[in-house]
Length: 153
Ligand SMILES: C[S@@+](CC[C@H](N)C(=O)[O-])C[C@H]1O[C@@H](n2cnc3c(N)ncnc32)[C@H](O)[C@@H]1O
Image 1: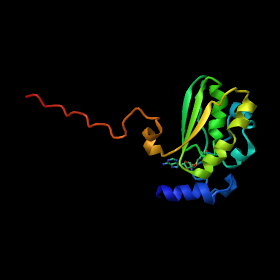
Image 2: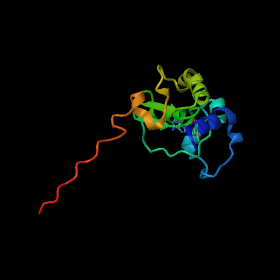
Image 3: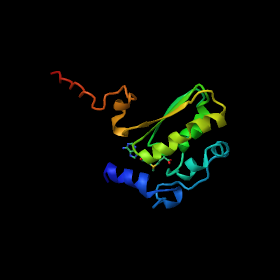
């Protein structure tokens, strides 16, 4: 499947989570109660456009900087925004304009809801495979080959 097909599916075909064609990769369990409590603070439009499969969150994220690859309409970014707190940061990367438009439309509203003076989230348009173009990767995408060791005789 090429990236244009994926963009078309997430940006144009899907209008809400109800339109998803498959739940094959979903683990099906309930979200933990402490995350469920934070999810209610996430705007309904963002939640309705959740196309993900579940979330795994470390126990302590306060002050952390988190990168969400394929962040879509931003549900998990806004969830984690509350866990990292005002001194942390969450960056979402996605390639689909429609998803990014929904995510960006709700930054100010969420910051007011969370009580943050300045946004601790941002959404960048780009490709997961090309993070260096977004200034996110300090690791070369094509690292130089490791020198081969000479056999000693
Ligand atoms: C299954 S959806 C999940 C979206 C979001 N995490 C959520 O939970 O609603 C996958 C997302 O990844 C994005 N995506 C897929 N491949 C990508 C790539 N190579 N680079 C950037 N974004 C990509 C799609 O645009 C889509 O929004």
